[in-house]
Amino acid sequence: MREINFAVGRPDPLSFPSDALAAAAAKIISSRGAELVNYPDGRGYEPLRNIASQRFERSEGRPVPLDEIVLTSGSMQALQLITEAFTEPGDTIVTESISYGGSLGVFRNRQVQIVPTPIDKQGLDTGELETVLKRLVAAGTPPKFIYTIPTHHNPTGSILPLERRKRLLELAREYDTLIVDDHCYGDIVFQSESVPSNLYQLVEDDRVVYVGSFSKILGPGVRQGYFMAPEVLQQRILANKIDGGTNTLSSMIVAEYLVNYLWEHIREINNVMKERKNAVVESLEEHFGVLGEEVWWTNPPGGMFVWVRIPTATDTRKALRLAAKRGLYYTPGQGFSAMGEDIPFLRIAYGFPNIEDIRRGVPILAECIKTAQRGDKELAA
Image (cartoon, rainbow, N blue to C red; front, top):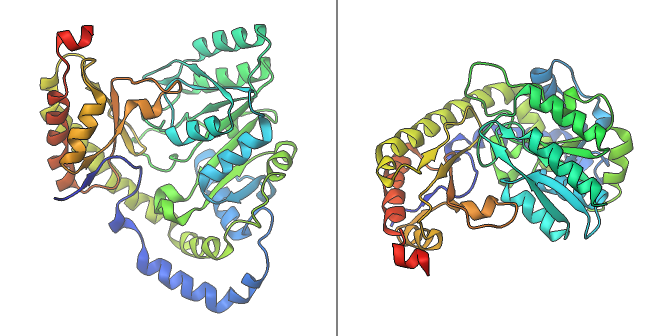
């Protein structure tokens, strides 16, 4: 039985530049291998940090000083370090009500209190956020930070409008809290119009930490992420980075490849992702409409995910089991609920499966959801 995996956000295996990375590795080991007897620089390999700065300049019009950029073992290490730096168990943070399950896992592991803020089709609702912040301050539990994915939100794919980004920064200043801007999917863009400036570009004081990744355009196994932060915040975060440093060999190889091929590689990834996203949306239109009026899905302008609303009457656990029996895997909505609720949604990650698997998998998914509908008696029980 052929496996179809809609569960994990990974790029197409055929897009991985094996030959070019092998050539980069050979060159780096030959010319700079002796440097690997040393521990890494505290902030990480400078040429790769320089590429992160150039990447920022391409989208925002200005480079970021290299001493504001720190390499990490994937973006999740960055998020873990940030959480450890600014929270203690029992502290409060604010997230979107629907957010990336990996990040929620980091927060829960730290035993912080997660306070959700509603989202809509444009992302974080800043009007609702103001209400949440007022309530928390009045209760004597102001949040240590606001975690948000404003660009190509995971899992919904939304892009927060510029006006809301500015309002978010105003609220953070008014209520004296930090913002963690998870920008890991920023390069994967399908739309022709430009994406609003990110929060690290817009902020006028030291209250935003930016999280980025090279893994989303190469592969999670590369484990090359980073964060950007002003000195006053960065030193608190680095105090917890006691792992001996981010893998220099991996950073060297990635930098050697990306210095020549970054934008070409991103264009290729975006072409593949757009084609697969379109295949998912077309297949949903063909096969999910029969599931009822409650059903809808996003058509994201970038990122790696389609967010699907399924009938309320769906036994989500049964649907998941039925799909697994047929070799189909996806992530149910509960994995993205800040409160861990069993919500009638699911996420389709479209980067990894090929077009044939997408067109074969979506109708299987529709059949499993239809079969998993609960009857009136079961709903009343």
